[in-house]
Image: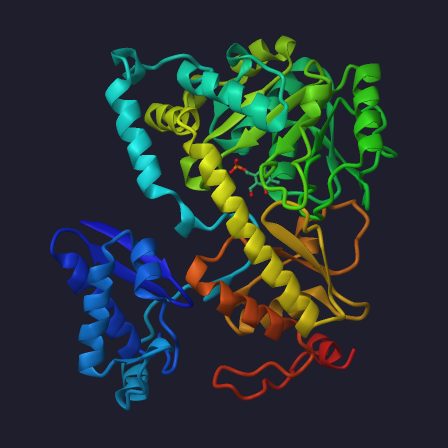
Length: 490
Ligand SMILES: Cc1ncc(COP(=O)(O)O)c(C=O)c1O
């Protein structure tokens, strides 16, 4: 028996397996309506979208909807889809039964995750079948610490073609995502200077867990200011390495200016320093050709790292590291026996996925999909909240919504949470000593499943508006804190 979840505002817990798929979905929906988790009037996703998200046949969803319509739990109207009916027993039931455990937020626009409902299941399965059928027996052994040669060959070709990376298959190390590659490089830096704590410079805004990883490994972290051209070099000092997101700064969203790219390379050459290039979403550039990898300019100075976490799914835990040739041995030394080898079957599948052209096709489709989402977010915010500017939009799966002077980032985040929307404030990504930027939200527009994007964006606009936010039953909420009051009357 397998358990899966579908999300569109609330979580539905559905048991699937054999003939119970239909029964499981039917009782989950019935209980959600009866318990008030699906409120009257809520529009359900189309049968096509729900079936796709759950990975079940569309007919099953159609039959379940029909059944619940005939029982009076749902209402189907031509042209307006299927909605939750007004049930007199709902409130009684809500009061009578203890609240089921629910997730804190109905909608999530925090950055970091692509649209998981868009994972190309059928294509991935087809590639897996091909790859496993064709694999030689040694594929099921411990294998090369750099990962499967099939995947390294496929990646060398893809990275050269799509990102301009200069490498050969022998120099690639397959990792469990960027996170493992980064941790290995931190260990390499520490091993290089055993008598003093080496310094790693990092962009003043970035992923907080990376700063922790660097510090825990024994590195001293130096924050670099980030301006409209990307990371600055003023505070580099005699750092031993720098971590950059040159194609699309995370989370501020600008590419690193060409002159800055050149200056970082000069700095690395002059001081024998290492540049770690985090190319986490380099494939997703919307308005012109993707910005090529920095590594192409200096393969002996730059450790390039890519990941499948945005392009496919973070659950695969697959990434790839292309270190300078002289650093490869140290990277492999840093891989303790416990860390070796990402899952071989997933590696073989990704190799086949890339070699067969499925990866390129998936990226093209995903790019169109995310571009549409990005455009509707920009359009909505510009139309409904014109005092908020949207930046960092040329690439990737997130955008920066800059709040006007006087608006408190924390208050908007809290207000969003009250109406069931999780959003991240820019300050969550600020390194301790980095100068503070203007308050903003970092919006991951790639995250929600397709059927809940419209609702998620509508709640975002509601959270950003300066009107009093409606309370849980649609009444305006009374502001109770100083911060909330100042948000309403800046
Ligand atoms: C800046 C940045 N780097 C890297 C990653 C991917 O990390 P991993 O490959 O370990 O999932 C992400 C994902 O959110 C990210 O935002």
